[in-house]
Length: 497
Ligand code: FRU
Image (cartoon, rainbow, N blue to C red; front, side, top):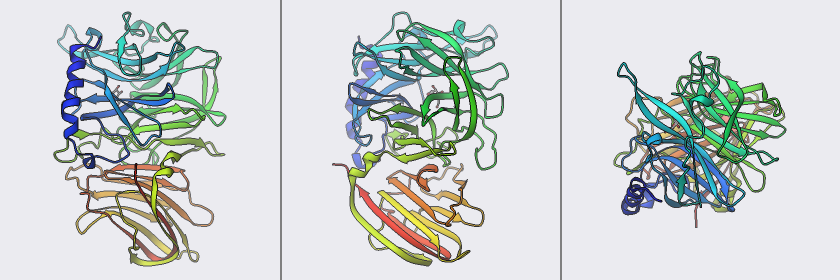
């Protein structure tokens, strides 16, 4: 049964979304059908296709009562739009259908598990959230909320766990058929934790234990956890609120954290080995992964961040975009490596290749421009200390540009979108520490898609995303060295058929 509230959202998107010209959106990064989008939800395989849901408010470009938007894809670049999947239409989720995940059941139905929010007025008049975990089951388009919702509530929390901040369940199935999920929670010390639950059927859940906790070191509430094996280790992703900066690894505000460790599944003991940021750019949050049919671990993130989202395109009927999905691996030191999904390579057109360009001062290269491109730039010093600074100017015209600047003496890459179409007084620069390579070379792969730039440094050792709102005819690209470097450039247009 489609509730009147969900039908209204579906009618609204069907009626008004066609008025958004396709060229007013990114070409291959997902944006909402219409209105507002935040976290990716339910990123998973269902009946041979990849489904993605998202936090959604169709009626305006501001966050409001959360619905779930819905798309599916076969290649992570073409997104087929499906009608909105859920609305906040039940007493237990009337203040929002918050983030969650999805899985295919053995009988071929699709199970969604999400956070239901309802607000409660306390005796002193204060309003606060009551967050529970709920389930909906459907056929890949229409979903019925489970009659016995919620499936996890206050009584299922460990002692001292907060029923106000208890959200974002991420489900998976173990090889023996049991389901497990992790959810974010706030502990008595005020900071975040990740709780683990288990179920035989996806609807009856019991608490197993805590996987890991911030203990006030890595931010406060831990949102949007994900927990999966990767290359012989175990990875925990979380999006902490209110982080304090730690060197250049973590910036203040809403952060994104990847913890790599060893996991004893039987005893639920997770031992940390390494902790790092996932994305070192300006706009990234709430990442979620799936295991692809061929075994790849693929991650997608919201390419915005709560602290910087005042940067909005003027007059647009949509707001919020996802990253390009990324393949995850670990290197020999257990560091997270991210590369754009390989599917993008089939849409590379019009190659422009330069090799061994001796760069000294500033140049542009014939044929190297664009806003929907996949470009790799490699530089190497011509002799020890042959340059003190390398700059890449992107999305450029006389007025606008977004720059990447690398200084080999500090190994710092600086991303700067001060002049990228935003008049908001918010964060526009980020400094990123790069592990220098023995040969002094630096490799930057850039994916640009109208309103964003994603940078992958040294074959994915560092990823950094930034949303830009520069006008679309600013297509210039400039290369600049103080001193001299040898440079190779390989650039393709990305053209979807
Ligand atoms: C993270 C988040 C989640 C929540 C959702 C609400 O961005 O705050 O914790 O479920 O957004 O839209």
